[in-house]
Length: 193
Image (cartoon, rainbow, N blue to C red; front, top):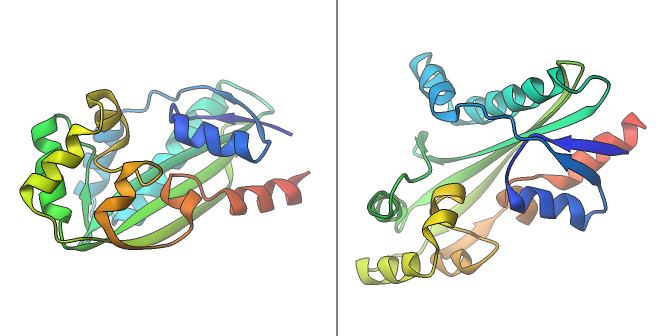
């Protein structure tokens, strides 16, 4: 079975490849900041924001690709029920790391499969992460290891790379933390066939 992945995330594509799921990438070009602002104004919680973003991406691409299964995905960081957005600069990245420093937060990953412009399945997973208590120098040294392009595209920490060293503990499915709860996707696809 072939999927269309409505995400430009190289990590998500790699997870699908690792599980031999044939997929084509078609970027949705959804304005995530605009959607988040609108949902926050309506009082949506982080899990609902993540789910809605995955659904919007999936449906937008599905409308242009009839009779195809389209997978949309989104992940948000929730600290005390506040959404932490991707940084827009290195200075902002440092401020985000300072905010997460020595704190427990949740990484919420949502996926949605659509066909012919309608959602047919969705799933949301939450993982708990606690950052170590790190000095400003340690946080700055960590950021020096990450290219600006990677930092702005994927956020302040990459658990699949050096980011794991920032954490006291990580509780949750590794693939979900990287942005794709693959086991649940596979279970759905196997039922769908």
